[in-house]
Length: 143
Image 1 (cartoon, rainbow, N blue to C red):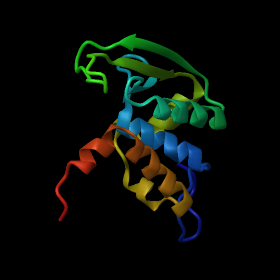
Image 2: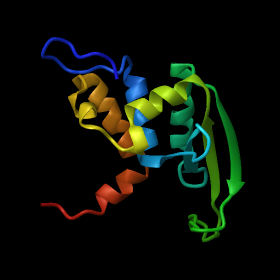
Image 3: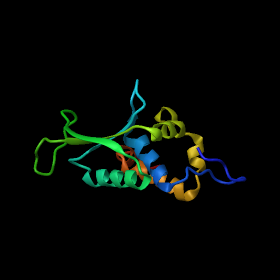
């Protein structure tokens, strides 16, 4: 994580990188035995989110390996009543992996992430709320 300003907030260097960490925290996973990081989304239900992830990668200059595949379980019912779900997977490799794994070790947020400067913190939450985590948070009862 980038250095702390004098008594000020931390910076990751880019709001788009903060958003990427949010996507990974919500919808990503670290490969075991390898150093890759994957982000998966349903193409059937979330095509716009897939486009947003691609745009974030482009802004950061991240190259990824992409693939789509039919998922057997869980099945999503589309609006026509068809049982289909096409998943889209982004696999990130290379130099970005060390940085990502350093900033979110074990794919868990750190207290330092809450000390990000506001513009980056907003993008971190934007990434978190765009992923599967948003469904979980929306289902929690209001206090």
